[in-house]
Every structure is written in C-alpha cells, then in structure tokens.
Image 1 (cartoon, rainbow, N blue to C red):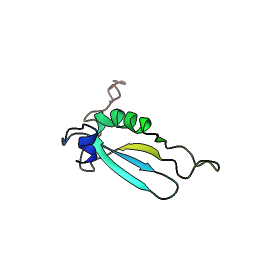
Image 2: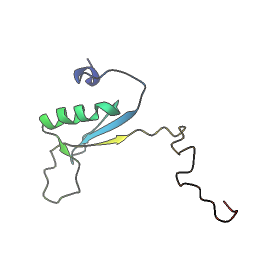
Image 3: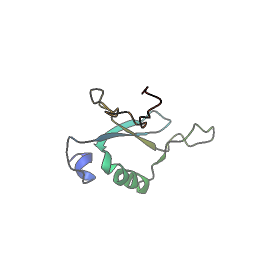
Image 4: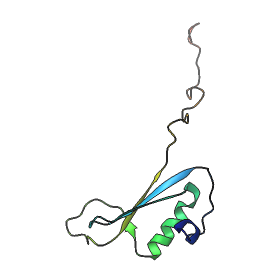
Length: 95
C-alpha cells in the first residue's frame, strides 16, 4: 500500500504537482500527486502536524516538518497563447 492509495488518490496522467516535505535535520520526502488533489493532501498533512514552508527563522524547531507544493511543468508543452492578447488597432493605414 503506497502513499497515493493511503491518501485515496487515483492514478492519472493529467496535470501533476510535487509536494516536498522536509525538516532542518535533513529529512526530505517528495510526493507526486495530481494538481487537483494538492488541497486534499495538504489538509491531511496539516492534520498530521506538518506546517507550511516559511522563511528560515533562527528559533524554529529543526525537527518540525514543513511542506510546499510546486506544479510540474512539461518542458515540451507550449504554454503561450496562440494569438496576441492586445487588440489590433488601425492607425492611418498602418497596423
């Protein structure tokens, strides 16, 4: 039984995100989940006592786990619009 089945997540090949869980002692865990399930996973982590990743604080507990999520970007996918977002204006015969 893996973490995906424990969290009740379905396997699919859609939009993906990575959730990183770590502490200052060097423990580091990375979980790959569907982007639309990030909220569900974050809620489960909060219930387990994992906090959000914040700036380094001199007084923070080195054993406390923190997490952050990042969307997986497909380098081959074109994320630019296929058209110009600005409306075209006609100025005396010149475009």
